[in-house]
Length: 209
Image 1: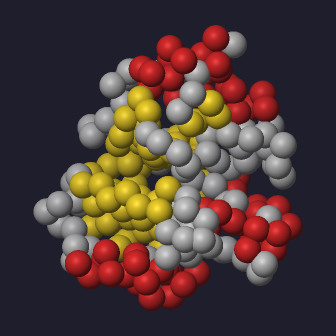
Image 2: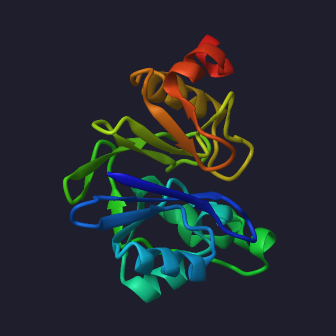
């Protein structure tokens, strides 16, 4: 599996292409915008974009979804508990954050533990409620990579003062579902820099709770 990481204006959320180098079957995780740049990357790498994966539904992670789906036909996937937040602009805060209302209807709603296939690659869905009710991480066990969205950051964690958030659920998700993964796993978050599970076991305040 291969990875392309980039940020696009005006929001500069971490966005990721993840794809099978042989089949070129690809997904994109949390496209916030920069569709022109995204389409150039698809053409230059000859990618077959199958899925738009959403770790959660906040405006800074979904701003490019509708246009990208229209241009590529890729399916939009998110955890089933995120469906209402994605639909409701008031909850996903799109009007405040972007000046326009965004309402996303997923093509497929995911279950905890479900596996998304990309050629020979496999991404497992880990439901991690807390930052939002339907927050999810995507885990490549073989590749040792976790796309953590806004659940787990380097040395910290996501906010829990927004619609559908829950601090107890967030801390439980991190401690019981993420910090139990192998220490070697590389963590690719929705914002800021990458880390590892091993580093977070040592330094993240949730580890000591």
